Image (cartoon, rainbow, N blue to C red; front, side, top):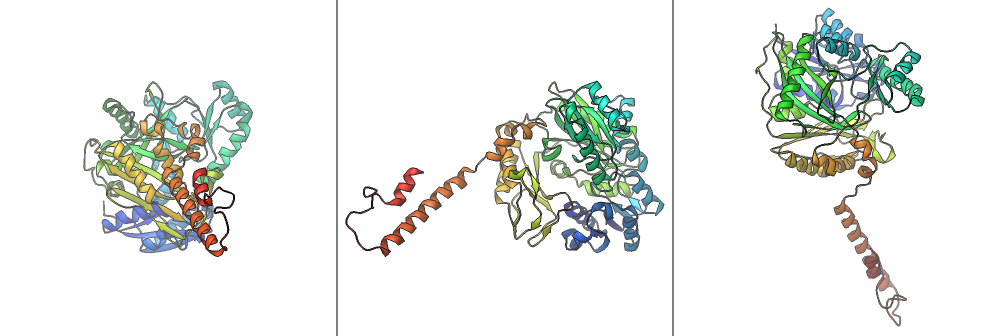
Length: 503
């Protein structure tokens, strides 16, 4: 196959920039697309060319297939990389690329049909003999049918969008009384995120771990896995912290899960990067959850411990090259990623769009910040509020935690509210440090994580208030005439000393 010369990145923000960086290292020209809200975005400035695709709402811009295809043609791009989200798991978009003679950097439409739609993936995995979480194998046509099924298998259940992942269109239902409102909310969110409101139901497993396996396949039938990622630190089914290796997996369990993931990919003739996601119960039994037929947000941690550039591998697979390795590499060291969001944890994690007036990102050995923002940039309110992915590498998990904490302490964003303090609280929590945390961890420890105070900052505040009180009283003493008795009614003790005693 001919080499790719120019790639249009059909996405925005940090993932668009991340793809463009690899393209430039490979000598490949890049083109960006942008909505009205993203005219001054960093991914627009990073690309060699940029093309306008519509109004701010994604359904009128980034999700309009023909506008993306037209932009690629106008740019003279011979390939499109979808990033993640938006059109990345849309089989009809893959076919539109093929019809236009443009290479789609990702799996073929047939594999996406088989695995990108979650209920079809479950059915295919059942046929392949892969253990799956109990639940429906088709989306429900009506609320009444869905409610009847939930009553049959019993609550708690999970409502899940059939057409995409990333925590969008997901709701946990504890009681049948809450089913109708949760159903409507899940369908609405799924439609807004993926243009597809199909929803299915799974039985909710108590205290599961969420562990995913990175798979990779070329066009010559070679398929391997690149080990696992622990993704159990989730809020509202959206991953917040990811790490690899998983602290709960043994080498034997890793090999077994990797074997099943490769089997799942081969069953649908997969090509490129994909992620097979599993739930692991308290007895360390694992069940197929879904397959994300795209690059994952958390792919940097896999790159840290394998030394591979997954975007470069995607491009080479799309060009028809064979995989450069035949088996999973042994994990090297430990990597952690945290997602920095423009949101206010103290206000129920409400998005915090606005202008970034000051920005200082962390640095130092083995620290990586994948970001799409800059000082003076205005975070829009139309898209996911993630502003960066901070990841680190260290020889051991303990050192990786310490490095992540140090990096977060250096991260300064002013003008908007972020979740940086919340992330620091997660990394400092004994349950996270212990390694055996499940998907209910952040919900269960919600109040504790929001109430964690930085002891050093508290001490600094105490000292600052004491110095301020002292300076204030010294200034007052100089401006007052001398009087008999010192210290007023405090028995000769100055007010600032009293303040210090009270503290």
